[in-house]
Amino acid sequence: MSTTTDIDPTALDTFVGQLITELGAAFNAGLVLIGDELGLYRAMADAGPLTSTELAEHTGTDERYVREWLAAQAAGGYVRYDPETTAFTLPPEHAFTLASDESPAAFAGAFQLALSALRDAPAIGARFRTGAGLGWHEHDHDLFDGTERFFRPGYAVHLTSEWIPALDGVEAKLRAGASVADVGCGHGASTILMAEAFPASRFVGFDYHEASIAVARTRAASAGLADRVRFEVAPAATFPGSGYDLVTMFDCLHDMGDPSGAAAHVRRTLAPDGTWMIVEPRAGDRLEDNLNPVGRLFYCASTLICTPASMSQDGRAALGAQAGQARIGDAVTGGGFSHFRRAAETPVNFVFEARA
Image (cartoon, rainbow, N blue to C red; front, side):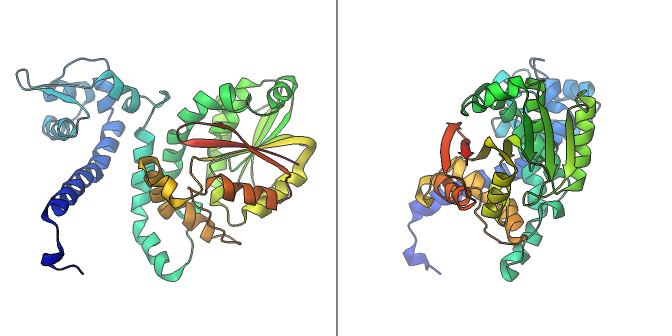
């Protein structure tokens, strides 16, 4: 350990300032979730300036708690405070991210996801000592809901308008009527978005997590799609069916214990001219390429969720959420695919196309 004579006071002050900022952010994550659950952000959206009393009245909450919550939000820059009127305003840009799950920039679900993962931190810490894994199904339930809420807006913006059109010949097949398997579908958000956009095609979603499949079936029925969308409990290495024109995997290949084994099974289930679309977190191939805010977010999530998930399965490949194109490509070609390319990208995603 460094001694006081080794310490640069300026560097120490700078780092302590960073820690104070991050500690405040850590506490605020809980407050964001409270604001989301109680509808505080939604009540402030487009409402103009509100006092704590007015916001409490609008939301049926206690004024004293709301006052303290608003003070924390103002200190963090989430809302604006006018000392002359003692009123608080949620800027429209902030409301765009916090007040609606339908926004393409919705972020409340991300906080739900993060806080659920933190509840499992003691269990993950124990795995550091033993090397054991922690399966997706073993996590706190909010992880499943938060994941859907966080990822769905991005899929809604990009999936059918950009990602599928970037694949060679796939959009035309889907419009004419194709057979699609969505592997690792979770609550079925990606499956349903594709089904709504391509009414001539038929879709089946697979996930090994039975509780998620139950939610997905409910979602499909509510959307009126049960006649051509179905969901089944099955892992990536053995999901049934063959002759699929398109197989999709959204943000899940890196979670698998044996991604090359999963790739080999996908190849067996595809039609001769079929396509596999793989959506993965954006990442460079080298650690130093990912030392940035997005990389930090994904490395943190990977430590708590993705790597333990892979370590809980046969193969234990543990690619991690920042696997990068080269390692994803190795897994894909290791499963027998000869064609692999990056077809599209966003600030947080890479979209890959694989064909036999």
